[in-house]
Image (cartoon, rainbow, N blue to C red):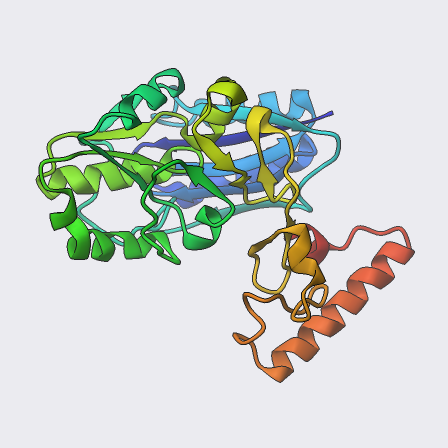
Length: 303
């Protein structure tokens, strides 16, 4: 059984780059794979591996300066969901592009999963999904507003253009695991919004803890690994991934004329050139040859 840990923690590292070699070495030693992002504002990542390996890596991360309070959410898989370990340095652990946003100074009011339904049912509460449009497309909460952004960095411009719609409203926001809301709630507080709330632990915690019979979630939740999506109880969903554009596909989408494995889907067929598609076809050919040889091709794992 593979243990999957989705983690993040905001803190101030003096030299984030210096932390990476030891963490990468430990992951390799413990057969832990996935992605860990370091920035001067903290750490973010999703990793998967044997129980003992995950425990060792989490213990190491908690020992880093300011990270004793690091939290994570766990789920499980019968097989490894990543192809390799990537430990990267970024300017932000979740990119918003707003230099004045600082989750360490203030964030919105945390709402536990068990209390989320009661909050969003109130007439004076507006619910905003802070995820990207392709994530929202496969699942969201009843009545949630979709900003229709393709990147998180577009959220501030969307808010500026739409903020009058939410005058005198309480604003409740949610995202996959909680990290984007750390920044979006700080941003709204800086914009003068007084009543700001966010789902603690994100959609993943809600799907883990709230029984399906009581849930106001519709569809599946997109995840950035080979599972593609999860549903209530964090069970793996029915979606596949277009390996050309990295967007989720319903089973029926793969029956459409625009779909070619590894080359295109109905969402991206007009976004890439003919040379791009030829390159994708060659990549898919190499993936299939690797599979026939019983090898694990990195591209097939989205790595």
